[in-house]
Image: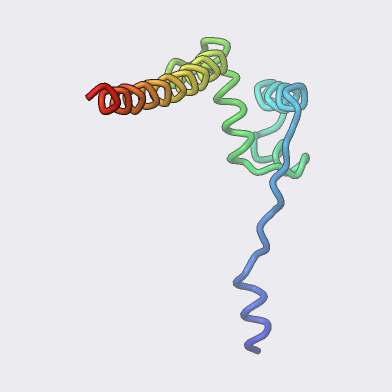
Length: 107
């Protein structure tokens, strides 16, 4: 009895999968067409409802239907700016250390 209870309570996590933008666009189109519900589409393609819902939301943000989040272009720009900001902070840190080092050397 205990073995049955243990196996029922523990689900093995699904391995992380990646999908092409073309596949995501097809799934979004199926959902937006209105023939099937989001749940039906996700079950038919063995996808999580959450993932499909996020894909639909992102497509709506990108096309301007929604305005309550960042478009794909905005997300990419934000990621690039954060990366550049991190690099610049590292550069400033190196320059501060070099300045302190050379200030000691000149004394």
